[in-house]
Amino acid sequence: MIRSPIVSLILCCLLSFDTRAESSGQELVLAVIYAEGQPFYAFDDNTHQSSGLFSDIAQQLALSLDIKVHFLPTARNKIENDIIEHKADAGFLAPKWLNTPEALVFSEPVFTYQHAFYAISAPNKNLALVSRVKGKSVCLRENYNYPELDAWLQDGSLTPVRVSRHSSLFDMLQLARCDLIYTNTFRARWTLRNHDFVKAVYQVGTMGNIDEIPLAFSLAWSDKMPQVNASIAALRESGILQRIIEKNMALADVSE
Image 1: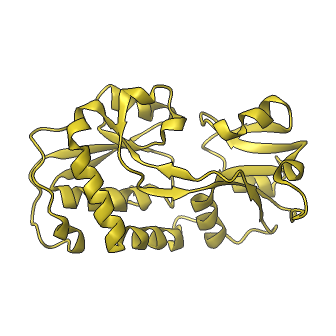
Image 2: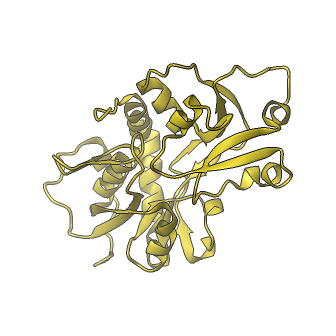
């Protein structure tokens, strides 16, 4: 957790990993889903190295803020409480996913994506999205909230099939366990790029919402948000953030 005041932000550190031999000794504990997987977060038991979008972004932010980053793998439905209970300092969480967003403080968005429906049959482009999906079953992650789908789930337009972390949504689709899956476009882009599925997968459409993903911090970090936001802005403006995203979208899963 925070052990001393954060030093002044030095943005030039974003451009080089060799400008500091050591951090100031402060630490950011970042909660991540232990079963997240690529492209977001993975841990290699052999090398004891973390990788993925969350890891790369956190390491760059830690460098620019002159702090160390430590990852706390945890369950998806525990991240919010882990931060509130000071077991972790932060996590990549959107306020709409949380039970008590007022108990946390949020950075500016770090990256954005959309959620989309995917199917193994090509959609009828002439139909509105609701007509394309109505009456179908959709695989969704258990312990995840999808507020944008609530109305369709409640009125029966969609039938949910809750899937545990142990099963790939795309595998469930290939096995016809559900008619549709609903997942973020980063996950879909990486999966479709790195897997050769027998059945072609089509994007059926999106709800039109843009998911803005910030870092959610414990309230103890409230006075540090200007430095955090300045660092995020520098990552974006320098092009480093986009390079991190593109690198991780193209990265093959060596465990497959």
